[in-house]
Image 1: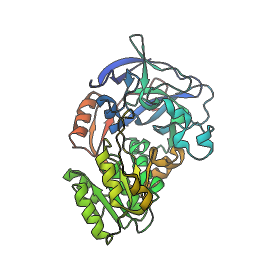
Image 2 (image 1 turned 45 degrees about the vertical axis):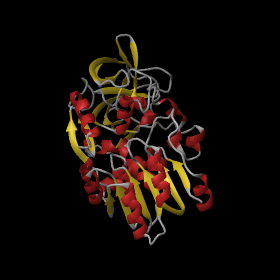
Image 3 (image 1 turned 120 degrees about the horizontal axis):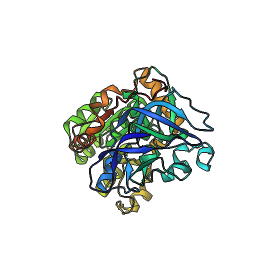
Image 4 (image 1 turned 90 degrees about the vertical axis):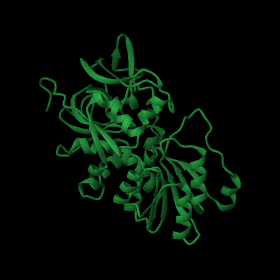
Length: 378
């Protein structure tokens, strides 16, 4: 079959909207018709070269939609199911899944190549195999994905809102709740209030932090943070350092979480300096994995027993945390509607990312109006 998709062919190039060939689902795979796709910063990393995948690739790794077909051996899903896609697959039986660390599932090792678990591709164009970002490719009207990448949700949920729970929401929320292990009464510093940072604010607030300090140079980001749980906001790391010393009577923040668009040595140093003795810095933001970009004074770690750690998908379990986030949304405790600044069509994907780069959006979402296949559930 054919489907329209946004294809990225190389670093520095815009997304190209084109018609591509899409294979039928094979063993363990499903055909999904997307209803919505989130414009997450990670796809912008590909375009800017902060992370270099196998090109060409169909972009998009936040998606929600309706299952239209299932391949042989599929047990979790059936046609008509509404699903939220997880940008990380969960096989359920590798070393990491079996020991409770499914965010590190071995199947996730090839997500940037966009290849499915059997080592082959489902998108094709002019004789080329096209990967799907994070084994998904949600910037396409339809895709064939592994059942390990889709979490069934209730049919009455607004897919154009819960789509954000595929990446940005659990990554941010989990960075505060799981990775930083926020406790009631903590003081938490959060560097960077984008699609992940804003949900780190929500997670820290829901976990009972006494002070949630959001740090971002853009006034609209700071205002959004204060509306969704931040007790204070600062324009610069220097201002945050001074404020946190005042709030904690010179002790320092219990935890600092780095969710900036591109991590560099300066923000890591600021985070290490702002935490107290025995405090923790969680690095959730990304940078070029081929470059060394952190330099610290080891004595700070030794003498004050400070910890610096990384976090992927908020150090959580997609098949546990996605339903959990949905329950928090349904109860009104987790805000999703308020995160979405603008919506776009697939043809406007480059405009959407320009708005992201310009700092206009907390979150942008692509909305599809693709009719179902003949005979497929609506």
